[in-house]
Structure formats: structure tokens, C-alpha cells
Length: 476
Image (cartoon, rainbow, N blue to C red; front, side, top):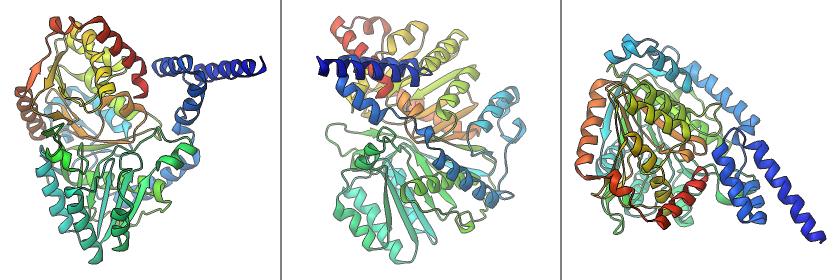
């Protein structure tokens, strides 16, 4: 009886903690309560190790604020900050000043005006551009990826890093501790022996012990000499080149940038490097003067559980509410929160053309079925869904009217909104948006429309399974 009483008391404490700590996010609270009722002892352990609010780390937040102030002093006077619609080069912002103001407040990185962008729509194109930039590096190479595989393309990048390090270029590589946990010790040591600095971001064991295991760094970053930056959806691995027999062709989107915006990609890398290594770097040489004269407006939005606001979620929500003609999205994972669902429904009611392309092939069945559970309700409102059939859709792209486009690492899901460290480039230049539009139209030709009538004919067991997956979706 004493053991039963102890278990009961622990269970009551657990429920009280979840209700008290998760009251701001009811869906997340319901998911944790579901786990707790299904398996009380494990539920308590899981919540203790995985349910922590990262924002509680005040010491870390203070250090990052200090770093940003230092870096801001280096770039002040070097960049063109976009403060009004006429500076964007996009006439549609004349009637959307409010969105411009909101975007400016979302991130530490402002909307900048001197940029040159290039959309990279295949892994081969992206890898070639990245390797070329690395080969031409003279000062430093900063790389950061969620997944880095020690396969053929991984070794190709390794060879360049080692060669440049031996030439005296500072080379730093940061990988997520969970996403890149399969990297062999020999692979890492080979780089370190050549002078490449390597660190894991939140290694699995240590991050579990200090209750940060659930927070993963999903960013994909390459900065060369502080002048050229890359970001988007691509990690480093042969599967992105279509060499995975199961997934086949891999459709993704990456971005090459020059100009003001690279300073803020660099800042995000330095912030993450400081967290992972304890080494603070903020030397002015990391932010050299660039000579980019192009007038493309770009903003780098770094979002994550360490930020005061949920920047990715706010950005999507505000953009959807501003739409007048179209909202076109590609995302491998589709697990929206209630606010995003309402914004999409509201857009359809205003006559906005809302289309979303998701994969036909899942790389994670649990997440895939959770995604499908959201479709029927949105289809009833008029949202059009498509399955990409040519291969695996991994691109994270959003297009709103001819107003803005985004390319980044953030999926349209709650993990990207609230738990992951992400990076998104907000692109305001009409010509760049036109490239994204053409890419979406091409992807749609390789996609099948999900007919709402036929989709409703799924069996009850299938719908039940999807419902259970949706219940857990805030934690996936």
C-alpha cells in the first residue's frame, strides 16, 4: 500500500506540474497528460528530461545579448537597414507597412537592403556552389549542420576542410549531437588532427542529463570569409543526392547569399558556437566590409527556444494574415498549431489560393500520419493539398502573393516553431520570389492532388491511428 501511495502522490505531482507549467500551450499539455496517463512512471521521467523550458537559461541569454551588442557595433554603418516600404524594392509592401514593422521586430537581424541571392534547387547545384566557395576561402570557413554523414559527399567536404585548414584558413564545423550522432570518431579525429575545429551542439548524453535533449539545432549554415553565406534545407549526405534506394530523388531548396544578410548568418553561427564550445568569438575581422551593390531586401530570422518570442510561428502567422492572392507552401512535415490553422482557413475565406505540397513518401511514418490528421479539416475550408510523387519533398519554402518568399530550415510544424533552433531567410525581392514561384509550379507538376472526397473515405482504424499521432504531434 505504501508503494501504491507513493506512486499515486508522484502521479498527482506530475499532473499538477504539467498543468501549471504548460498552461500557455494547451496542445502540448494534452500530449504530456496523455503520455502520463498511459504510462505514469515513464511519463514523469520523460517530462523531467524532455519538458524543460529552454528560456529559463538566463545566464546563456545574457551572454548572447552581450555578443549581439558587440557584433552590432561592428556592422553599424556597413549595412543598409530597410525601414520603410520604398526601401524593399517591392511595390506590394506599399499596402503592407504593418507586416514590414512586424518582421523588423521578429529577429535580432534587421531587414537589410544590400544583398544578392541565388536559389539552389538541387543538392548537386548547392553542394557544388558550397564547395567552390570553400575552395576560395582565405580567412575562415564556418559550417553548421543538423545532419552530417561521413559518406562520399561528407568525405568530399571533409577533404576541402582539411586542405584549407592546412593552408592556414580557420575552419570550424558544428553539428547537432543527435542529428549527427553517427559520425565516426575516426572521421572527427582526422579533421581535428588537420586543424579543423569541431564540436557537437548538445551531445545526447550531456543534454539529457541537463534536460536539454529535446532542443535540437536544425540549422544549416555555411559562411565563408564573412562575405558569402548559405542556408536552407540541405544537410550533408549522399541521400540528398538521390543515392538512398528507399527515398530516391530528394527535392530540396537552398540559398546562396552575399551582402548585409551574411553578417547575421555569421552572428547566429557564432552564438551557437559559443553555446557548444564555450569559446566567444566576435572579432571585427569576422565581419569584413562587403562590396555588394545589389538592392535585394533580405532578412535572416534565427528562431529557437532561447529566443523571447517564437519567431518562426509569428512570421508564418503574420504572412498568412497579410495574404491577398496566394499562399503556396512546401514542407516535408505539416503539424500546424491552432493559430496557423485558423490563419490558413481565414485566408481561404478571403479568396486566397492556398496550396500545400507534402511528401508522398514519408521518412518518418509517425510524423507523416500526424501530418495527414490535419488535412481533412483544412480541406473542408478549401485548402488544397498535393503529394509530391517524384521523390521525397524536403524543401521548406513559403510564398505569399508577390510580397515575400522564405527559404530555410524550419518546417511548418510545432517542433520547428517551439523546440528547434532554426534559420529562415525572408526574401522580399520580386525577381527572387518569381524564382520560388516557378520552382513551386514545377514541383506541383510532379505532385498528385489529394481529393478531399476520396481522402475522407479512409478507414476508421486509419483515422484513429492518425488521431493518436495528432495527439502526440506537439512533441514530435
